[in-house]
Length: 101
Image 1 (tube, rainbow, N blue to C red):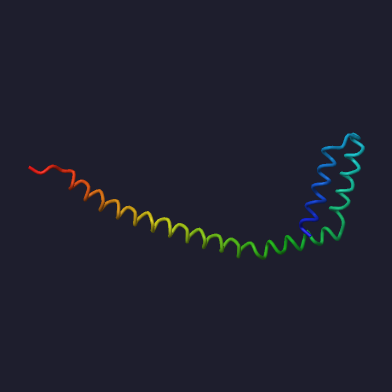
Image 2 (image 1 turned 30 degrees about the horizontal axis):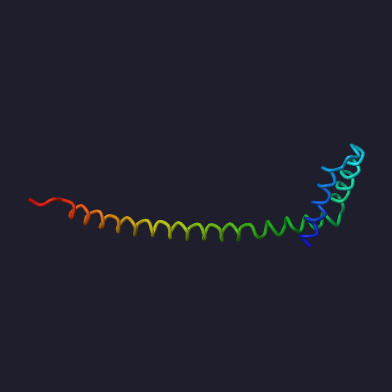
């Protein structure tokens, strides 16, 4: 269904942009699009989609926040491990390059 809608929208946009008939053709298409958008069936679907998004938005926000926190923990955990490893390596390399008298 989504693919069909995108196809129709794409064809409509292509026709409007590619039409050589002038303003009359554009006005006809714009009126048809407005009539379609204002129809009760379309508005019913739009309202149901809006309600669905309003219901699911908090769940999606929580999911994304949890995922972001997980990524931050993983990145900060790996950086602290690298820092500890780098610190030990730097100490060893400093000792080995220091000449003894």
